[in-house]
Image (cartoon, rainbow, N blue to C red; front, top):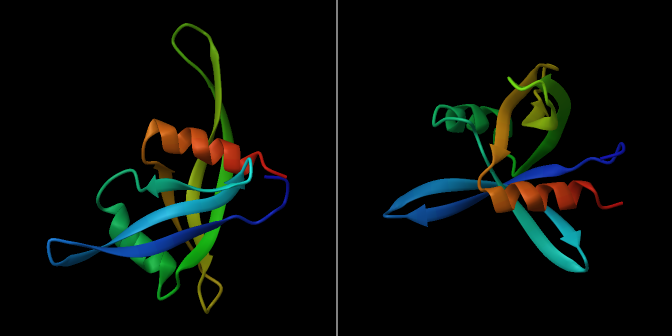
Length: 115
């Protein structure tokens, strides 16, 4: 990610008369406009995302690397992701996110690896 800011975007959609939000990161990979859909780890996260986004449509993607050993002693590396915003009084609002599908995980990695 090398110090460039990546936005998590929120886009409303209608389903059976109710409004829901999709969360995603946009990018350009090999000259193509792409999206990687993100979701909170559980349904309670959607209420937290409403707070993080307040009335906005974009917030910052926060990324933290991790490293751990599995039961076989193999080192597993990756990143955790979160939507992050700063409130009017300087308070930090954050909600963990994860790629929605395996293909979204792959696309997110491609987006993050673009220069």
